[in-house]
Length: 504
Image (tube, rainbow, N blue to C red; front, top):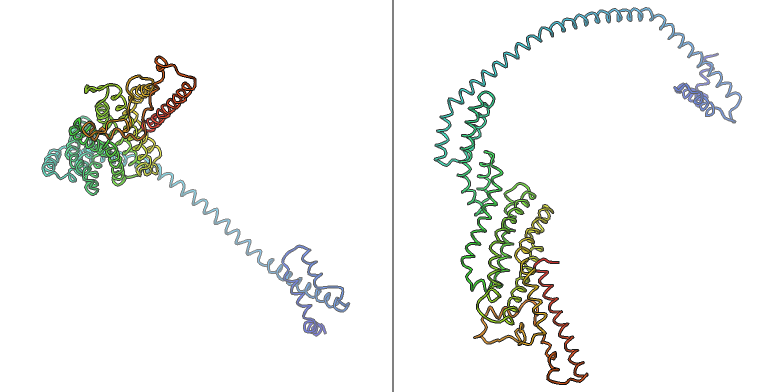
């Protein structure tokens, strides 16, 4: 009857069995999970018979679980003696292993103590062996020294620079072995090796200078590698700067020899072109430096140093050119002429020079050289501009501080002179070809109008005539206009001078 009842429950109420399975699957010991299961299984519509069936099922499940627990407990009780025996065996084995490890530790300590003395003996033997090997190498180096010198002399005769650099590097490393054992011999051999390196450097430098002239990148790499092997890399930059400065110096000397008085008299025709060509030269040298040296910043530093040295050479030559140009027909010229003609001519030359250097400065600021160096290093670009600024101010500084102010003052106060008016513009200057050559005609057309206004002539007129107030008023108005025009022209000259000579 009991089995039949269970069978009937299983096949007539599968939902209830499913709920029992859900209860058996609950693993959490929390009572809340059991409450959730009860709430999900039993509701207000559950009948009394369904509750009785559920209660009966729970009793059967509980009895089954109790039986399973009793069976597992019996099995555990039966296995306890054997488990205890296993644990005893493990404990005995661990004690045995501990004793074995203690014995091994004692043996290792004894062996380590013995090895300490052995290691000390081996170290002393190794030290003796190393010293003996060093002595053998030193004696071998002493024996083969003369042979190496003969080989090097033969290589020098054949000009095999690359092989010479390798041999010198090897000789220097072998000489270093004598530093601690034979210091006196080391010093002697070091001097010889250094002399040979200097000799190789002197032989390579002419070829390196030729490379700088031709801008041969492949040949430069070849000779630069040779100098680097003998620790002469720093000489490459110095030699490059010396070579380029020497080239500029020769060009300036050649140009100075060809600059006769007539050519310097027309300096304003070709000076700007000369300065712009110099700027192009700086740009080409910077581009070459970028190719041959490692970094753009290094190339910018070398170019900055080069330009500083070139500016020093330019200052010496250009100062003499400008002095000759200004002196021709000026106060230092003995060609005759009065101040009314000489001083305006000198002022024209000043204004032409100021305008030329102003155009050069503007071209420099807008050049690829400045933009490229600024991208590589702002500091080097600033130093470049300062070097050019120093060049201009050193050339024109003496003129605007002394001569320019004196001449401008003379032109300003010339409106009160009694003598013939000072003619500066082409309108009042003679235009006969027989009287004026081409250079003089060009000087009559400065970059700005510096025509001196008419002189104030009525100041002494009262000594001859009696003027009315109307006539005096007209003359005063004319005089004020003349003074204002004269001051305006002076201001224009001042602005042109300040731009050209970099004066604020």
